Length: 402
Ligand code: SF4
Image (tube, rainbow, N blue to C red; front, side, top):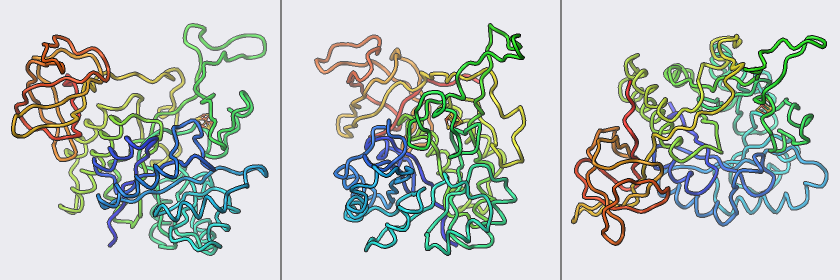
C-alpha cells in the first residue's frame, strides 16, 4: 500500500519551507505564469528551483499549478515555461486546461500532470476519461460525498487527490462567475473578489427582508475532515490536499502538523481513536479563523454548513513568536516577535519535532542586552535564556483557555 500523501499549499518560499518542515509530503505552489491566484506572491523559476532542492533534502515533492484557463493571448511562452519547470525538477503540474495537459504530455518532461479540481471531476467515468487521456492523477471536485470517493478510489483507475481542509465555495468550485460578474475579476483566472462573502440587502420586490443591522452573506464554513482520514487511507486515496495558498506560516504549521500526526498515528496503530481525533481537532482550532464543517462529505451541505451572517475572518493573535535560532551551548534562544506578548509568563511551544508543550518564558532582551518588558513590535528580534523544549523553526503561542 502506498502511503497517503499530505499536500500543503504555499504562497511563498518561507511558507513552503515551513509546510515541509512541519510534515507535508508535498507542497503546491503557483508560478509567476499560467497560474490561478495571480494575487498570491507566486514563485519565480529560481525560487521554484530553490524550493525543489529544499524539498528533496527533506524527502518532499513540489507541485506547480499551471491551472489558468488561458485566453488566446495567454498562450505565448507556455511551451518554454513547461520545459523550464522540468529543468527545475518539480514532481507535478496541476492543470485545468485540456490544451495545456496535451501540450505538456507532448513534451519530453519528467513530471506528472494532475487534473485540477477546477474540472469538477465527481464520478468514476470522469476519472476514466482522464486516465484515457494519459493524465497521472485527478484532483476530485470538493462536492463529492464519502461514498462517491470510496467508489472512485476503490476502482483504482487513477491516483485520486481530495481536499481535506480549507475554504469552500458556495457554488461548485471552478464554476462561479459571481466575482467576474460583479467586479470583472475572474475567479477562474485567479482574481476572485470573494463576492459571495460580501454583505447583501435581501429584497422582496421593493421591501427589504434582511435585517439592516445584520446583512445577508453567503459564505460557507471551511472544510475540516481529519476524522475521515482512516477511511481515506483504507480506500486507497492517493493524496490529501489542504487549501489556502494565501494562509499564514503559522496556520500552515498548525494545520499541517495536526494532519501529519493523524496520518502517522493511523500507520503506526492501524486506527485513530476518537479521543486522538478530538485532540488534533483542538490543535487545528488554534489556527482556525472561521468555523469548520465536513463540507459535502456527509451529504449535501444544509444551512448548518453555511454562514449567512458571519462572513468576516477572526484575526487570531495567539501566535506570538517564532524561534529563529537556538544556541545549545549558551542556552540562548533568538526569537522573532509576531504579536504582542508580555514575557515572564507561561506560553505554549510547538515545532517540527516538538509536541505542543507549555513553557515558562522569562526575561527578554534586545540585541543591546536591554530588557524588553513588553514584546509589541512585530518582526522585532529578542533573546532569552530558554528552559524547556525548543528547536529552530518552532512557534510560540498563548495558551488557549478552554
Ligand atoms: S465568489 Fe465565492 S463562491 Fe465564487 S469563486 Fe469566489 S469564493 Fe468561490
